[in-house]
Length: 106
Image 1: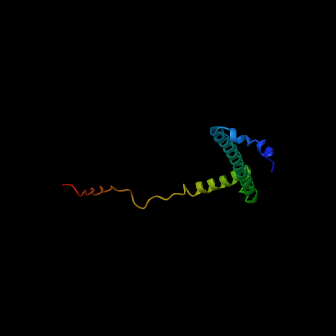
Image 2: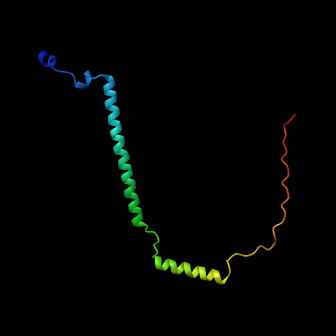
């Protein structure tokens, strides 16, 4: 090897940078990567939820059918009363709970 070719080589620019600047540049790179990862995760969650919504459709009712069904249920309840039964026995007086026993006192 020729001595002149190795003497003319410069070290990379990173060798002249301050360690604090290198650390800050690395942290900036990590921050940008985290932003992309969060955005990608949110986007993928949206895609998965849309796919699940289309794969498993929920129950849909139209307002006309729903109101007719609820009207029939109300009329049947009106015919049979409120749908509740009266208690077999009137409420009585509750007995007081026994007092708590504390041990270990001297």
